[in-house]
Amino acid sequence: MKVIYGKEQTRYDLTPAVTELSWSSARGQIAQNCDVKIKGGPPLQTAGFLMLFAGAELKESQQLFHGPLVRFDRDDRTGDLSATAYELGWYLQKNEVSRLKLDGDAGTELARIIKSAGIYFSCPAFGFTVKERISSQSYTSLFTSLTEQAYEKTGIRYFVQYQRDKLTVLPEGKNSIIPMFKASLLTSSSTGESIEEVYTVVTAERYRDDRVVSSATKSNDSLVKQIGRMQKVIDAGEDKNVAGLAAKQLAELSKIPKTRSISVKHEDENAARLRAGWLIKIMEKDNKSITDWIVTSCQARWRGGQYTMDLQLERRT
Image 1 (cartoon, rainbow, N blue to C red):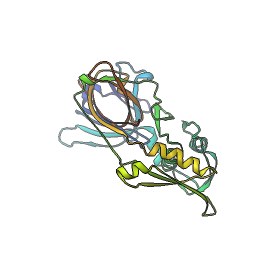
Image 2 (image 1 turned 135 degrees about the vertical axis):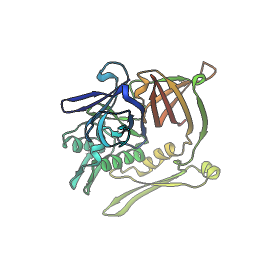
Image 3 (image 1 turned 45 degrees about the vertical axis):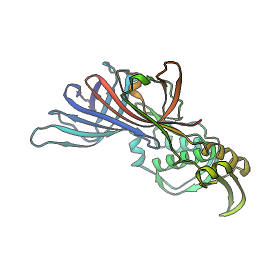
Image 4 (image 1 turned 135 degrees about the horizontal axis):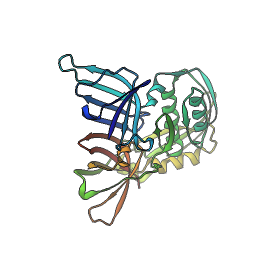
């Protein structure tokens, strides 16, 4: 692991002085945050960049964090530093887009608007059309709104993958590197299930001038009896097939996800880049069966050449 600070032409290798280092991500967040404590650290400035590399060399392929320091404190007695940095996507919540009209595929429109701000940002088509005028809001708020609509209308969740200053929106589970952990080597593991985001009834409505012009409701009656009535109302937007949309989303939203909490220690430089939205695999204790899980949150720490990760996982079947 290498921990580097950079500001214009200044570069400091902080690695030998780091006493604590952690970073985290969670479903729905557009940027990871990183916290670092440095013994007698050199002079740092806010908006200087913190860069983490999983390997001993400063290769872009091994970089797992790149972003500005947003705050730091220096102990007046010891001179030790505590600092917090965020990935570049942090700036998307600090800048607002003017009131404008969306007219096209939601993912394509999202990419168009964010790229117009001078950010290297790529995003796939989301598969549904938006035609509306939005109020002035942060780019982060727009990202959150459209990706939440994507989940409502397509059942697909998205996350942002970083490569230095390049931001790429991907469907959850479409990471190119897929870590595998052996259950026998996990320091802790617990499994369960959750109905917090489950719905047993879905209604899709299509509007014209704030008036409902078509509506359809689908329900999973056996599940209603089993766990209760929980209704989701979806704005169908430009989709005229409200019955098809309601049925499609009920099939997704009525699945009760399996959940898992694990802690794992490893020295895998590729797995060090793991973040919320990634697919991981676990080889179960029988050393035969392999299960797939989506990471919903990741709390990672590094010390003495070893990574420790606390992961919250989800699996829908």
